[in-house]
Image (cartoon, rainbow, N blue to C red; front, side):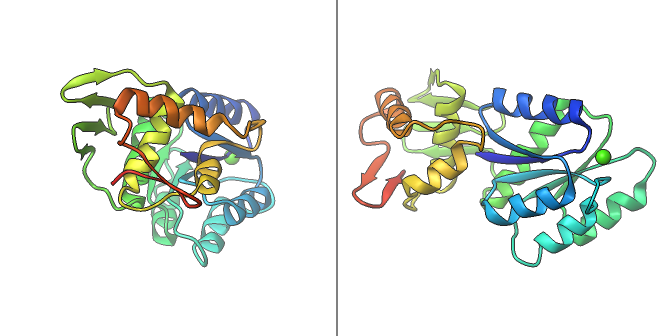
Length: 216
Ligand code: CA
């Protein structure tokens, strides 16, 4: 899962990006509205965290322009006591909002919810044969037994699970799992898939030659 975090306050931006990576997300950042719009249009993010008061283009303008071409889930950050800002953001097409200052755990809970909705999954628990994925608690069991996954293995699994029945190409997986700052090794995805199969069963993730991966 790859996020774009848009915030012009450098300390808050770096806290948010670090927290997102710790959660296993790939996270890109933008510190003004123009950079945000450019990145949001050129990459298929799983969700965008968008501050409203930004230099160059404000958050409403970014959102309004983005919505002409893309339905990427967007969570807006607004200042306290500005109810009209939130209403305006939701009217333009924001999926959710948080008022500053906010609790970081609440931010991630809300992001998980808009990512699920973006993938047309309203339920938090996904049953995939003997594997059960709780996307709210971020836990995985196989035949009732808890399975320990690394943060990155979890996001690979969650992405494939949210898009189950469809083949996800390696290019798409790379785009959703690694951010602009990561030197991506070409075999790192294979390592995650290998580990997931070892933990969840060899046939759990199917390789479609020349196309990509799929959970059926
Ligand atoms: Ca701001």
